[in-house]
Amino acid sequence: MARTDKRQRRAALAAAEQEVRALHERMECAYSVFNNTADPELLEASILEIRALQSRYGCALRALKALYAGSERPRPLQRSLGRASALS
Image 1 (spheres, rainbow, N blue to C red):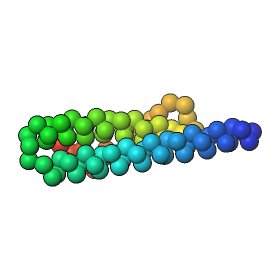
Image 2 (image 1 turned 180 degrees about the vertical axis):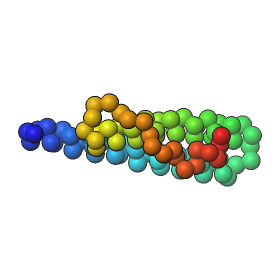
Image 3 (image 1 turned 45 degrees about the vertical axis):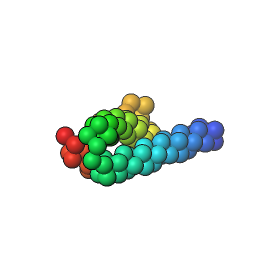
Image 4 (image 1 turned 30 degrees about the vertical axis):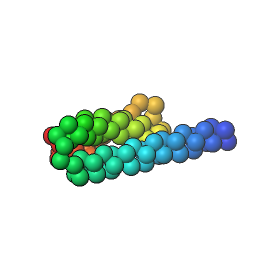
């Protein structure tokens, strides 16, 4: 593998890891809003935001796993997000 290929792979891994971290932080904030509000409209908005973030997080995590595995096609997630069942 050429040096530029390794650099590109490292850059892609770093970007994917950063995206997963950022989405995780956004989910933590959304859960905080959900857990600390009594307004029904805000609760509904929080639920929708959490579900959207869970979907994006799952996609980002599959992409990261595919990069680590060296495959071009993402594989399905092996386990779900721990808090996903709280809203279902």
